[in-house]
Image (cartoon, rainbow, N blue to C red; front, side):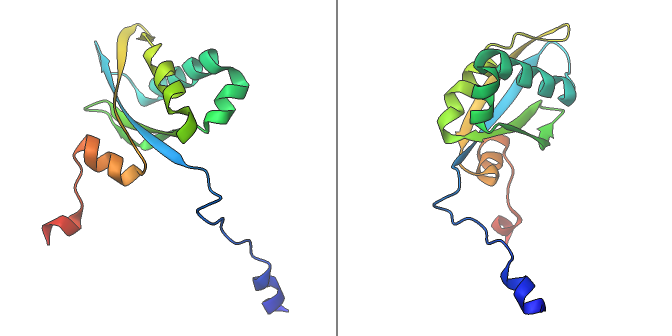
Length: 130
């Protein structure tokens, strides 16, 4: 009976059927330090206002909270490969977060999260030191 249950596990999608993702590395240039929660809310509101609900759902956008650095105010946004320019345009429309004037600077685009961290945030792998 257990063999029958194991055979019914869903298999992961092959890479040819998965959606292609891109990672946008950004930096917030502001008059004062801005909290991640405020940045996240502002990005979502900007994308929703610019693209609408249907357009926002097609972007498959996700803001990577664990990659945000409070000191340098840099982070990553994941989106589909088709919607990179739409997200960039939405970021360019943001002028204020709360009372602080801000500018979103796109540092670059990458195909993987690790490559984006290494290219744009200067992170290194431990295997490079051996």
